[in-house]
Length: 412
Image (tube, rainbow, N blue to C red; front, side):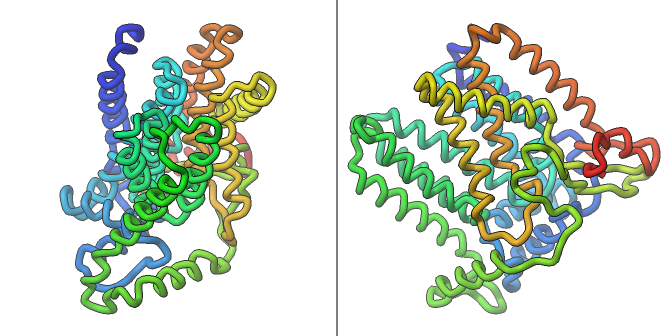
């Protein structure tokens, strides 16, 4: 069947999207209360809907605008808080499929990358909470799709596709400033990949490419501040727009008080300190939501990263090397970003990329691993099912029910 679907990649992408949306949306109203950072973003979205005054100004507006769309459609309730994040998570999975297919030019690794991203658990949890990260991931993944799409296009289509890439990357920055390094990475990768291959990106001149990337992404970013110009109190003005960015920078880089769930960037791939987003009585039962990656994918993915680096450096294999570089960059930026505290959910983007690295590694070493990728997938499914009750906030048998999933004391 996969052989037939390989000839119809758009149909396969549609099937992946439908299945993912069904999985992500079941029980979306659990918990029925504001969960973890929803306590910041949902109240801020309510204020935004009223166009009342500036609030939660340490982050740009686009993520809260997207949450607002859900609340306008479904109401100010758990479904409304989370429905657009659920759609964004679904589109992220489809984007992982599209990105991997463009990268490898093969359907099997693209399908496996999408499945690993679903089973990796991070996208599942973030798609079911009214936070900003689901939107950040969606725009960056599709920005990556547009990047590869542009690289292989002709001179007539390349500028428009490159502009689309810039819009997506600019929108990612308009959700969270954590996307800024990815814009720089896209520019650097554009320059590097066209060295000696001027036919790539439709033969676009390097200066024109950087100009499009810069102007379009910056314009997209600033356009998302439009609602702030209509606040009843302290409306934004053109003269205040740039100084406002400096105020955001100060808030982004301020020293924060220690937090129970803080963790260092190097610990995230090792699953040292996951985060309980929720654990309390709700809807007549004790329920919990734990943000934790699937151990098979998170730990097995590190082996895949090493394998891809090995293949890239020893065998000059471009695709594994690209996947390894992308994951290393995504994690490495957190080693230099000036944040006083780190949290496991910052690993969201590297965790998504890890699913691509795994699929690429299995594809590159397919003659040696044979069909062992299928057995690995079975393990991933089993672990996802094992963790599902504390990913989807199912009813637990007692107030100590969480102990079943505590492998290490740092998980409590």
